[in-house]
Amino acid sequence: MDTTTLRAPDSDPVESPSATDASPLSRRGFLRTAAIAGGGLVAVGLAACAPAGKPAWTFGPGVVSGQAAPSSGQPSVPPSMDHSPAPSASIVPVDHDATAKAVVDRFLGGEAATLPLGNQVLVPRLDGETKVFELTIDKIRHQIDATKDPIDALGYNGTWPGPRLAVVEGDKVRATFRNNLDESTGVHFHGQRVPNAMDGVPHVTQEPIQPGESFTYEFAARVPGSHMYHSHHNATDQVGRGLLGAFIVEPKDPAQRYERLYGATQDIIWISNDALGGFTINGRGFPATAPIVATLGDTIVIRFMNEGVMMHPWHLHGMPMRVVARDGYPLGSAAFTCDTLGVNPGERWDVVIECDEPGAWAFHCHVLPHAEGMDGMYGMVTALVVQGAAASAGAATATTFACRVPSVGRT
Image 1 (spheres, rainbow, N blue to C red):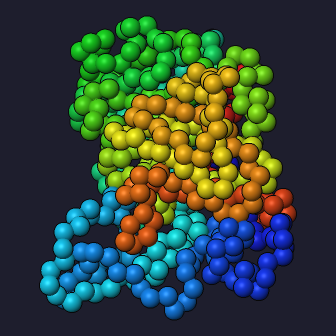
Image 2: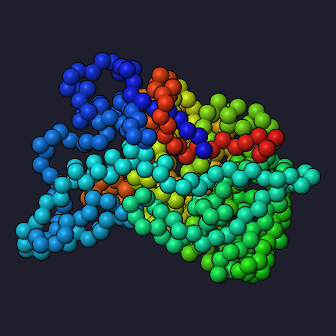
Image 3: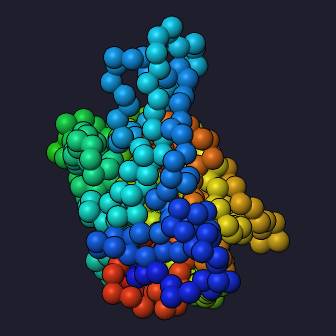
């Protein structure tokens, strides 16, 4: 997992703002200024959305006098969509600015870095020319964010998402999964062309993996690109509870790999889910989602993977995305540019982003009930922070989604 540094730039890289524009409460302050404080990421000005003294927001149907006001810790699940008329009683206004700021402060304070990390590269051992991965299928306790109680979930090697498995086109792969659950399961390598007996669908191509038993999948990695592995048995429940991970097959030709083809400095896995724990990115809901931190001039690659049951249109503020591959297959001349990309269940889309606009840029699902409500932002929200070279040389660190594959997986 990469770490990148961030501190406030000494001056605005575009222009010197006026005293009013320099205010930490201004939009310009939010977009142009970033810093680290208390071991976590802080973007000065993002903490406040409106000038002091702005009236508190009120929302229908509102809260009846005498009832508890909404908590300041917005859950990952969406707020009520009930817009029926409020009871004929006095309404307690909701201080949207205060509650929204409190959640953003947690994000900017580096909450993601306080929680265990999934999506880590699992280095295989070699058995002759075969790359061997050994994984367990486990019951785990998982936190969606730092303030919520852990929930009962599932994971590969004890994490949600499971480890990132990375090989090269043509590699022989052997992956053994030991089932530590109290229920049966199976594993499907989504997007790979495998022998039928290795397809991972219980009662169709194999018997279910019973509790305490193991199953070994063996195949050659024939299809390069961004792929997934997940349960294919009681899948609505098991995948929804965390049995999912990324399977990356690098092209055999090094010149076709993203760090050579596009000069990518970060290769980011972004797995969405929308079942257990609400709307999550890599198993976390905002404010525990990790920011993506880049240096001005960097090129980054994001591999969107949808393991949920809903379509999620990912929207980046400030910069476009160049969409270069779908389901592992390069788009070539059909590549296109957009700022909002819908990713359906089971799909994988690879995008290239030129980080040419400094600032802290919101990055979120644009199905708005998946991202923001009465108590501010939650769920499928993060930020792309583009900082100057001077800021990237600071001492503090901020955790990102990025994982670089070690050389053992890229030969």
